[in-house]
Length: 115
Image (cartoon, rainbow, N blue to C red; front, side, top):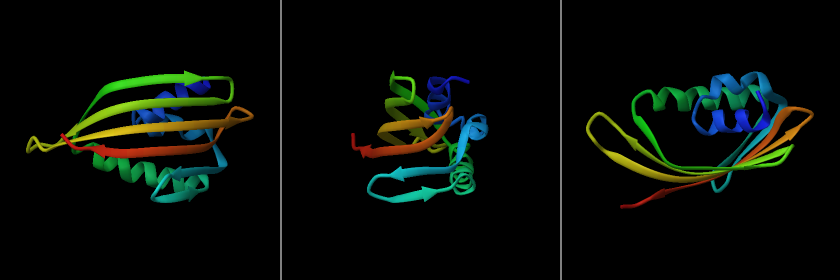
């Protein structure tokens, strides 16, 4: 996968396909929340998120990608809807930084948008 494909897969919640490309020392900065360090901790967080995402329908209303050789930024707007038609709209901007072909750092800015 290219760096752009890896970033797009991660932002589209296809986490498992990105696992082989994660640096062992990856750092995921969830701005305003926490920082997750290390490949195994990032995978565990992704797996937990994937379990939740199985319970909702996700629609990407916006998905813009800008990239260079070692950096990819994705600006997205997503709608999550559960079985009871409860909706949540989330705006996200994720900056993916690569080193030697491996995903070394992710910085995620996320906010829920009220209707």
